[in-house]
View 1: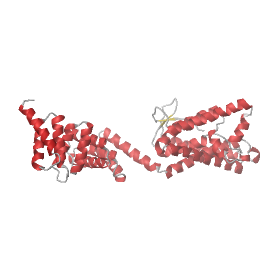
View 2: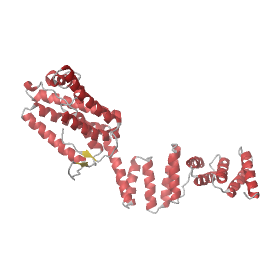
View 3: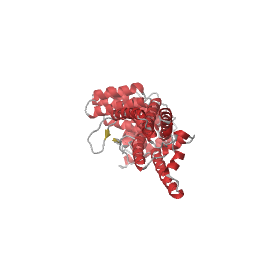
View 4: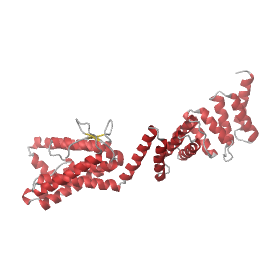
Amino acid sequence: MFLPYATDQKRTRLPVATLSLLVLNCAIFIAIFVVHSATKLPIQGIMARVAIVPSNLNQYSLFTYMFTQANLAHLIVNMFFLAVFGAGVEDAVGRWRLVAIYVVCGIAGGLLQYMVVTRFISAAQWSSPIAGASASCAGLVGVYAVRYYRARVSFALTSARPQVVAVVAVFLVYQIAAAIISLMMNDQQAAAAYWAHIGGFTVGMIIAAILRLPASAEMDYRQLDAYRALEIGRPGESLTRWSAVLASEPNNERALLECARCWVALGDNERASEIFTRLLVQQIAQNERSAAASTAIEMARTELSHASMAGQTMMQLAKALEQNGDFALACRYFAEAAVAEDCPIQDTALLSAATLCAKKLNNPEAAIGYLRRLQEDFPISQWRPQAEDLLKSLTSASKHGT
């Protein structure tokens, strides 16, 4: 495999599938030496049964060879690449797809190895076994390069941090050149190894394209650029980038929130209120109560009022805020719902606002006002008995100065 390098990924542990593949490779490597010690079978004899032998290809070796390493150095290098690039790929596609990519790229590399050796290398050299996870790891590198094409890599003991695309391009040119030269020299081992990398890498890139990872990468980098633009005081540029995200994903909540923040930074509170309200309505519709409460609180902190909103939506938002412990803001939305003509439960909103004022906000005067409005405007409300009891309690406490 090519020289190892580390990406910019920062993590405290490997994801499940990546770790499982790594453990499986190490376990099989140890098992081969345990079998060798226990049975005295030569390593080459054991490898001939699980690796690809071009002169005697069996139906299982295209699968088993990718979990069998030639030696300890081979294991260490391949597992390094599996850990570094497999983790990033698993983050992008999920654990089961990672395993599938590992296997498919390994089989593709193995097939290309077999085809090159049997087609271009002399028959006398067909007996050497071909083993290793290199093709599978090269496939993961191909997927990673497509999905994280702007990532930078750090080489050990150097300050160089080139982009992953540049490093992969050098790797691919080297692999192709070395593979062609090795064919010209009739070298089975070199030819097989190089073409395995090329096969695995190429199939990995094809899989990435099928999974639409280039589009996902473009969207993520567009959002990253938008974040950075706002951080360095360029809200207009950030707004342009977030608007592009919304053009392709109209319901992207992160894009809506950041667009609203950009309009606040640009001083256009009216546009900011419109987008914040759009986000609130969407969050309530999707029953994201905690997120809706956070959005409403942010609006209040920036002294923004919401745009036109249905009374029922305001009721649900008020309940979310009450559950979140922001009683003052919850009371405000209950009060607004109570005067919204399209709200079917205005009496409930009045009672809720009164209850918050009386029991959470220490504002009995406001509570009394809401309760009297409920009595006057909704004489046959189901909540009238509760309202009367609370009103008596408040007026009694007021008379006694408590």
